[in-house]
Length: 91
Image 1 (tube, rainbow, N blue to C red):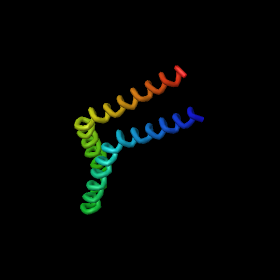
Image 2 (cartoon, rainbow, N blue to C red):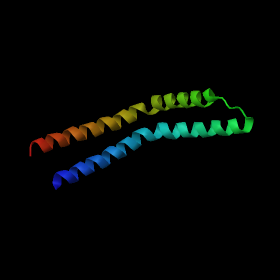
Image 3 (cartoon, rainbow, N blue to C red):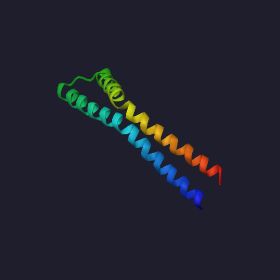
Image 4 (cartoon, rainbow, N blue to C red):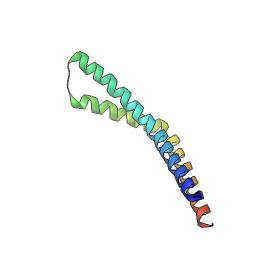
C-alpha cells in the first residue's frame, strides 16, 4: 500500500513539474496568437504564416530567457526520482 501511495505522489509531482515547465511557452504563444488573431480580424488579412512566425519567435525568446529555470526544475525532479528509486530498491 505504501508503494502505491509513493507512486501516486510521484505521478502528482510529475504532472505539476510538467505544467510548470510548459506554462511559460504556452502562455506566451497563446497571448501572441490572440493578439495576431485580433489584428487579422481587424484588417481582414488571412495569412497563415503571420500567426506562425511570431509564435515561433516568442517561443524562442521565452526559451532563451526561462530555459535555465525550466531545465533546473526538470533536473531537480530527476534527482528526486533517482533518490526515490534508490530508496525503494534498498527496502
